[in-house]
Amino acid sequence: MNPNPMKHAALLALLLSSIIATAQVMSGGRGTTPPPVAYASVNQLNMLLSQLEQVAQSTTADLSKLRIDKWKTDSSNKRQVQADVASIQRNLQSALPEILNQLRASPEDLSATFKLYRNLVRSMTCLDRL
Image 1 (cartoon, rainbow, N blue to C red):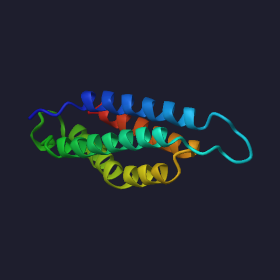
Image 2: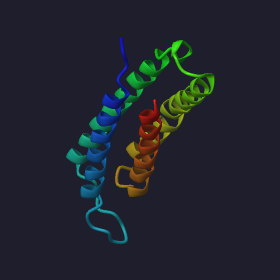
Image 3: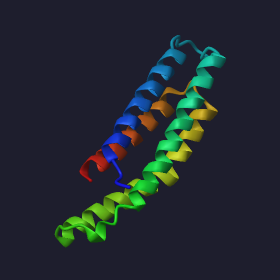
């Protein structure tokens, strides 16, 4: 199977834009206390976050199948790509689940949404270099 990082990056971007749109809808009125989040919005957000988890798992699996040691390129390029892959895998296995749990715990938290956005942008940037 030939992994397609661009496909995963595009799917991550689509999921991210949906999450941001949902967060903006949920944070519409800014008073002293945030309004309660609509049940349908929370369900939609949880569905998007579950899809994002599935994409992260399949991306991690695809990255482990790259066999960078067999690439026909110089050793410094191989080391850089291996470092990028290790960084992405650490992010997808450690940092991302924590951020997703924070967002699930408080779906109205716009800062958690942007934390997820920045995390995904960094991951996509590394994936683009592969």
